Each structure stands twice: as C-alpha cells, then as structure tokens.
Image (tube, helix red, strand yellow):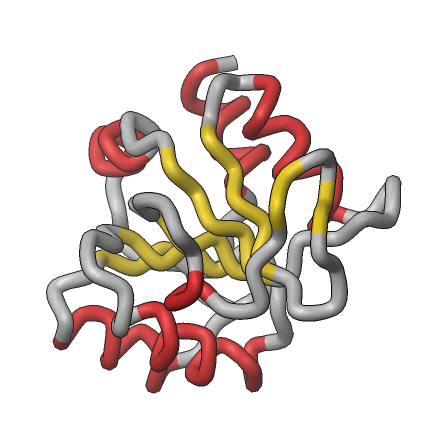
Length: 138
C-alpha cells in the first residue's frame, strides 16, 4: 500500500491543529487505537473519542459519530478497516470545520479520499500519527 504525497513540511503544519476526533478509539490497553490517542493527549492535543460502543474513554465523553461531536474538530484520525472509512468520511463532512482526514497505518479508501478532497479536506493515509509525530518532532 502506498502512502499520500504530503511533504514533511505539510505534515508539520497538520500537527499545529489541536482538536483530533479519533474514530474507533479503544478502551483496551495495548491496542494502537488506545496508545496512539494516549500519546497525542500527552503531547497536548485535545483528543475526542468517537466510538459508538463506549460512552467514555480515558475520562473523556465518547461520541457515536463525528457529526455528533459537540466541540470543534480539526482532524479526524481513523482507526477503522479501510472498507469502513467511506461511511466515516460521509458522516464527517457533515461537520463544519474539519481540515484533515488521517487514515492510520494500513488504512486507505480511495472513495473516502476523493469525497474528502471534493469537500476541501486534506487527506493523509497509511501513516501512524504517533510514528510521524516522533519522526518529525522526536
């Protein structure tokens, strides 16, 4: 699987955005969908859990869908199978203010990328937010 063509300079700009809705965020220690958001919180990001099966994760209110989040969202960080990403993006584009869809390592959906870009939203795919942050700012 390829990755997007964003430069390191562009990625650094993305990390200036602070409100990150994490779709598929997990309560289970040891899962990437748990330790990556935990790392982002430790780096000063406002992480907003999006998981329909958990009312709260890491002491934060969890929302069933991105469009239902009651606070500003800059980045939608997706921890869902590639086949599920289109539905996530179809929902996310309903929420004003989203600037970036970030599909985690191993995740890519071409239709989701196209839809996001049509709506003026940038797309990162097949990259880990934790690994990229450590690489760029480590």
